Length: 315
Length: 315
Image (tube, rainbow over all chains, first blue to last red; front, side):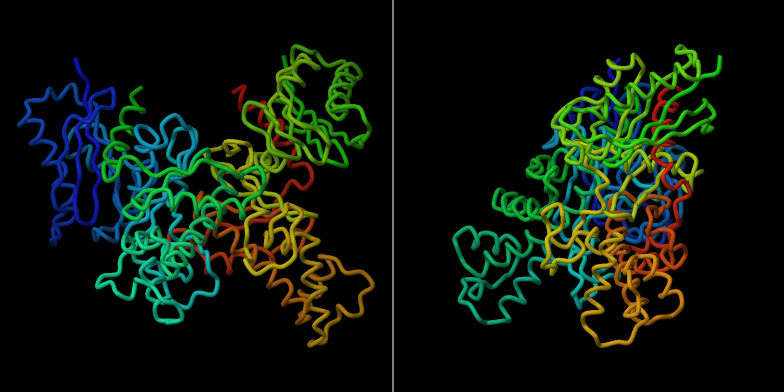
């Protein structure tokens, strides 16, 4: 009998789900909005109901479904304990116990960035490696660490929070996390735009950026590739902070490969090349010249990683 | 038949060895100088010969000796591969294969700081925990990370190199590793003395430090405890850099406990308290208020950890 599993990526805006076979092939995927109401943990009920309806609709044999692997936007301990999910308005609960109870299926879970990292290692840019650091540059900066093919979750599920490594002691503006000088303040899509606003406000260089109606990371990277000096400086600044942070990560976990994902990573090789140079000048010799790659799975990394959580625990 | 094992800590100056029973009790320990000559890997031959002579002298049953666990001063991969040991003048070799060949006994090995961390987790200040970060403040700054009761060695054996995390982008002086602004330049015994020399050279504050013939970490911490303002500032500076570095480590691996060892750690609670405060102001909320402890095993941590490598692999 063919064995199947679900990978689910629960985010603040949408819930993504994928149905996988035991070889890790994605058979189908779906996406639906994360409802926000007063019902407690509605996202969990919605997930359970969706999976139940897919099983019925597709006439799947329930005995062939070996489990559901879930990524959640916050710290998740290996035993499923979640202290809080600020994006989803929940306090403490155990995702594994509750979703198992709701579905009658085996559940595994992790932090969304960690689960996405597992997906990239399994079927994406980390394929063939055993240890990897994924950093995702989106609205914020997320991170996930894989060590010996497993998620490094940390004692309270808060490992791999690369976006909140302090890279600038001098920063005056406070990050969303309450600290100052976090990587996220410089290398996220919003951080890069902030760097650009500051550079433009200095008004000491000509730049095509002044002619743009909309300032976003893509516009800045595109102009940098065309040789616009100010845009190049902004890109260099963001890449320097990212290189510094990844150097610190390497001094701690010494991975085989760094994978950069998220919307900003569409910039491609200019990003990996500049980050690698700054990385190299901030690590010990033994850690120099690691592999730097752009993520391959895009928004599907999370559902792949969820499936992998189930398939590897079943192997 | 009682099972025994050896824990060996090979350093640049001395080689320490301990004989342990299967309950982890240290039955005997020895220390002898690391010879420096032109003979290649003499330290390895010396270790093998010493163990052989102990087996004979104490009439130990060779069949009851389950192995030798070794710590080496440099990166060691999980399979025993060593790229180089600059302190001992060797290039690439495989410590496990070579020492097994020499002794006929099972060998396990790791980086000395990692092995010491394992020792502290097993029988020292990390007892009862599963994940721990050890930072040793001696002539240099060493680090070892334990995750899920195991050494986190890294892909090239260079994980946990906390001493060479960059904590000061503005530093002008080069660290022994070739980089600038490494934690080791501020929080090692020599780093603290350097901070003191710089503070004294500013000549803008009275201090009993001016009356001291010898400037060392103990003198500075002792005066700080007496309330000497300049000494307190120096201690605060060193603890701030250490707090910043450990915050970065926590963002990556989220351990349960931090243990501070090495000669400087004799300063005691002033160190853990000041470091913890700076740590707390540099981590996300989910990582605040970790346990900070002073190491318990002193120079024996390495031989304990060596024994643990063998006993845990034999369990």
